[in-house]
Length: 432
Image (cartoon, rainbow, N blue to C red; front, side):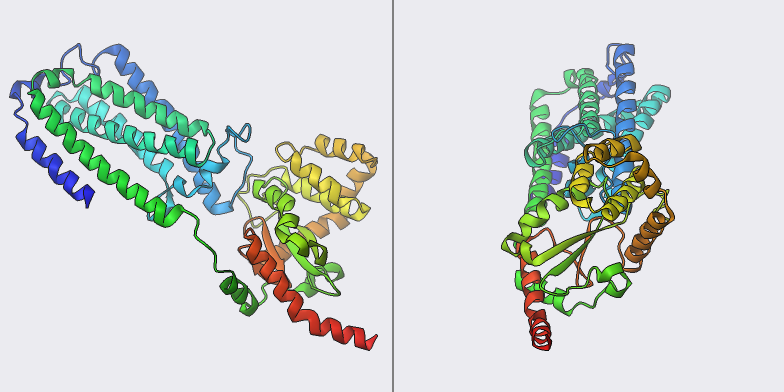
């Protein structure tokens, strides 16, 4: 509603503004104006190049996230404070109502449009005013959106995404230059008309920001999870994973422990987070569960179902994990590999193995053995047959657990599994 009134008010303000027609001819045409001044023109071109580069990279990362899940290992991630991971995987990274369209793609189209309008204003004098006026309006809009996104980065995501900040700075520069180019225009209009026009634009943007706040409140704020409904949905869902295909009956809840099977990738940040937090999410039920890791590396070199996988060291780490498991020392070394997931080279794996008193020559032979390659291929085929396309993916008794990161849901499912299998355990005790 505010947006509608803002548009109407902005149109009315344009009609009220008595602009000298000579201003149209002078607008953006004087040598003192910003768009024809060589220094400003080259600053504008530099801003466009920087913006296009950063927007292209973020578009690529966003589309990769949609296709492959959280791949991690991004070039712009340097620490927990300066990284792109939170930005790329956030709901804010995509256009409202269009989850498949990255907002970085909109930024890319904006900079392409600015380049086109700048060329028209420069080389087609008859269209200079229309092109330059459109350019100025787009730049002011982009600067407003950039300010909003910067606040989201700092106060919501609590991180600094360097490509995002580069896009925002480029937008601010273009906005400043476009405002400077309006000097001749502003000298030719009455200040009362400028105030009315400014109020109309502010009303329009006020409506837009109100719409964004409404979207954030209704779609981005966490909502309470209906634990009972999620547990019941899990119980009636058919099994996707056939436990009989697993060696040593892994994945099938037997005895007194519930088997939690988790397909992981050692270069996946979410896998690292899940591996460290899963025991805490289980709470006092962790002693009644057995967590089993199986490999699904997003590495095109070893995973035929991920031809665009970007985790180029995940396959090597997966073979190392299988070898560590065969040696009986998988748990501590898996944790160390997660801690070093940004650099899982062969030398890094050897250093971790040497620290655990493992002979590196024997380890390398085991990693390259046919048994290890077959075990990795078996895990990948099993994951694919079970519908796994991203990591981490958790199964309990063959059923996928989608809200595993909700501790109450996870504990509710484990409790329900224990209750459902209690008769089987009681019969087993009677038989004995």
